[in-house]
Length: 282
Image (tube, rainbow, N blue to C red; front, top):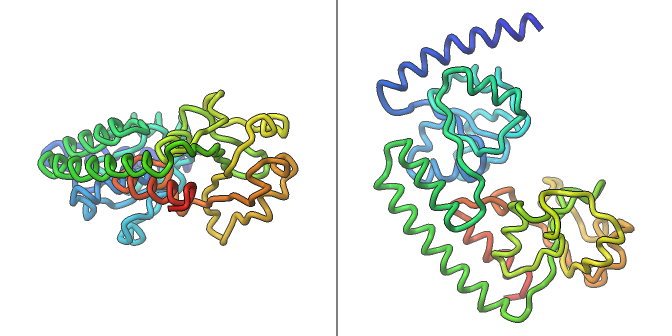
């Protein structure tokens, strides 16, 4: 315990110096936490200033050359601060809370980005980051491009899904069947792609029972890729609670390629089109 404490003291001394330097000019050593945050910084032309990022930040390809600080909800304060950032730009859902407290008290400036899963939320993210990086003109151009693409995607979704709204459920994993309710990125993504989330009667994530799924009658199961070629339909629909659903009857499983497809960032319009095509066969 003493060793960890001393290490953190050293980190605080170093980051205090970095913070003082940062106040004299724009940030030069940025840590980004969240795939949408990272993509926006790159899209603004400031990717070269990123020294580290979280595990889910995998786009663009240059992210592979950056230091990885792990999953953004299970961070290590020492691991983050030892990199001497002069700015941290983070999704507001980073954690755990005790680590966030240490980071907040370290003297390193932190810009928290709201996890708002909407067109307006996307505009706000770009505006906040562009302003903090003193890249307002680039932010305005990015906003125009992204919103035009988003509006076109929404028009496309309305065209292909009209009168055909399918019931779609999203699960984080099969062990506990933790399903996405309202106030989740998955729920917003399903709705934007023209689907209906029958689990939106509750908020957040919740273990879903067989009885609940019988009532929900999902047409499609949505999951994230596991990085090992799965999940596969035979594994998903072998789960007892799912076996009698319409989705199981048609082996209707859609696997999303990457966390960005559940976040609202520069490529959200692309992700929405992909899901709408998968749902409605266009």
